Image (tube, rainbow, N blue to C red):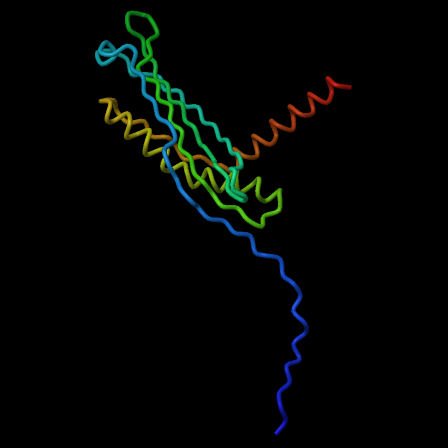
Amino acid sequence: MAENENTTPEATPQEEAPQFAVQRIYLKDASLEMPNAPEIFLAPEAPQVDIQLDVSEHGLAQPDLYEVVVRATVTAKTKINNEDRTVFLVECKQAGIFLLKGFQEEHKTMVLGITCPSTIYPYLRSNVSDLLTRAGMPPVYLGEINFEAYFAQRMQEQQAATAAEDKTVQ
């Protein structure tokens, strides 16, 4: 009987597979202002709502850990006696700490700009709605966001700003 020999080629050192993990998701900041209460509760017109969204990220002191913050600013205005009045102003910052290890820089930027905000956003939506409901206002439901398109738009804006800056330097 022939003996089986291990003819496996020598193992080549493999690159470590990229690691992604959510370490923590938390409400970093929340504020609510209703400067024209109680008059706003008697306003005859439905308020006009404006929603602004922003995403930021930065590395933490520990290697491979990053904080990503999604900020929503929701402003509602109405007319009372032909004057614009603020019904409410809500600002919430929902944040998360993420482990990103073994990613190439290009992929890391995409994960921080797309995957991380997509993970955080449902918590932000819930907190904004809950804050308004607890204040006696009807909830504002933040719509779904395509963070891939949002990321692409941010990259285009950054490239345009860099190109404009380069033209002014020359």
